[in-house]
Length: 377
Image (cartoon, rainbow, N blue to C red):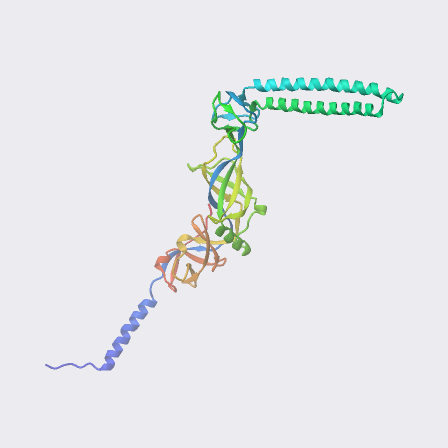
């Protein structure tokens, strides 16, 4: 059997032909159909959301200011009371007796003062006639001044007794909702630590407290310095509250307090918003979602979330240049609806691949099926 030997140069030419065919087939790969989006900067709202807890804007502890037996309770426990409504009555009889006793003391001191005035009046002409000594006149004047002082003291005692009597009837100092009574009728009430009768909660207006992480504050400051974020003047945010069932609270709130210190145990700063609550939809202790409105991302560049590729090198997008996909690293900000805000890496007019990024590689030829616009809802 004769073996046919192929010259080596023929083999080399064959390999070169196969390699050339493969290279030609790769270079002539058909373009990938993609959906693109033209970069058009817009000013976007920069709303932020937190979890808040409602709190009474005015908590009043109703306490006894005089000692006595609780005679009656005049409010519906858990119900609403208006300013000036009678809530409790402490037995006024001992206090009435103290008032009458104080009145008698006042009248007695008035009589003593009248007598002292009469004595002084008689002493003056006698002294001028040298009928009485200077010592006698001085005693008369001293008795008059002492009687005047004693009368003022008795009148002060009467005022205190009448004031104590007024404390027997305890009225609501503000309008709000009252909790249950601590004592029942017949209990001996004393002022001091054990004198708490009930607690009154004002719910219109109502406060909503929420905490902002220190990291968020630092990120805000950094973005403001780089002109990526703009806050409303004097932190004049509009605050929206969303209830647990997803409904939006009907009135907008405003921030009226920011704690100047950071809570060390949580690394957060306390903020407080105040809401008008005429229909009592919010009650103390209720959790709500708090959305701060008013900040903006001026002239923001944004791309669909489907356009962003995450890798070890960082986030990137494909930009179409001369019919080919070119990969560009970007610096991302926050989400907005279905878009990523891009701080760095893109410019106005760039054509970004919005859909189909999983089908292209760097340098791949592409054909644009559709150019979508960034629709902000």
